[in-house]
Image 1 (cartoon, helix red, strand yellow):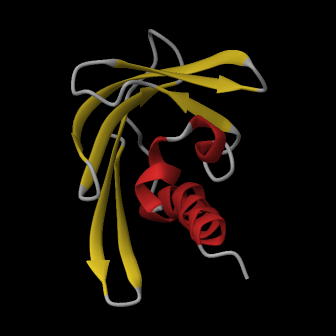
Image 2 (spheres, rainbow, N blue to C red):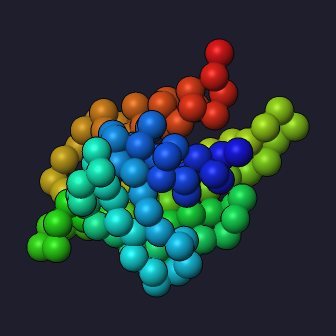
Length: 116
């Protein structure tokens, strides 16, 4: 269920600030992020192991600095533990700034896959 949420365009928009991710999820292949049906940021799949790890590069536009996202999944008796690693090498922001961006993403993903 978590893997589907990470790779399904109808679900990524629910937790990734409205970005619907469209890709084959094959390493090296592009990712097109759409917002409300319009083209948005671009990306590239770096690594994909179903149910274990998904890594990709995300850019707001062709000349913009990349963000590298790695989602690590670990099955647990009650479901799945998700760890998100976000690397923004050209960003001068603080760790708190990064948390302000990515913690809401994780919270929204948790709500999506574990509705109350």
